[in-house]
Length: 185
Image (tube, rainbow, N blue to C red):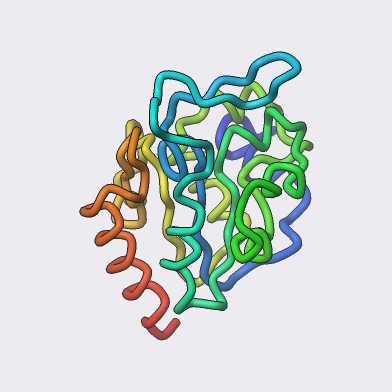
């Protein structure tokens, strides 16, 4: 019997889409500030971030991805677990251009939710990389603690408040996207 992160990788149905180039996308701390709370009867609400709004950086991400039409998005956000694995429901707030790129998530409803939640984000993504076998991948996340050393070059660490709109983060994202998408597999 496999346990821990190995169970995340191998004891669930294989993804519908494998291979290709993918972007692992977190929401909080990437597309808007990290201070999002799920309030009863209100849904997700951004607190403690005056002047900011949910998904404020979505258009900026769509523009950064525009030169790479073959790039797919895998959701690596806790929103998928909160909304019981509904990728369609979770991606509704993205721009239409980003929605069409979403092909999956790191969390699958067949996974043990506690085991998955206990794993660091980097290991959650690495488990999906093992399952999905992309040609190349990149992750956007403000959570950088406990990432496996072999994955850090594929991470763009975002600002917890400004997300990808922080100028050095946006520049790093564009550089890594160009390198990933313009390299022959």
